[in-house]
Length: 92
Image 1 (cartoon, rainbow, N blue to C red):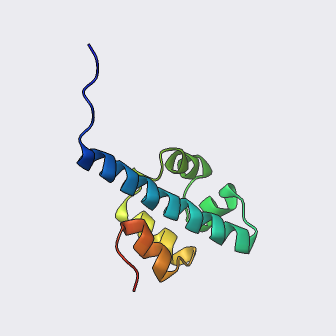
Image 2: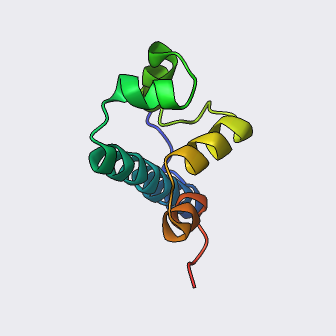
């Protein structure tokens, strides 16, 4: 049985989700690059086990809790623009 085509709204949401994930990974990469950190050092800074950080990263940080995300934003010093891009609102 052939699959039904996805509605255009679902396609837009998936595209928007990919943009938000790209912004998050970009912000983490920028912070790691500035500080010269590897993933295990970033995990240590965030007070989480390196394997947990790796699992979060592998799953696109979908399972990360609000407080863990807030701690990550503070400790990695995400910019206001990066935060807006991550949550999908325009930066002004």
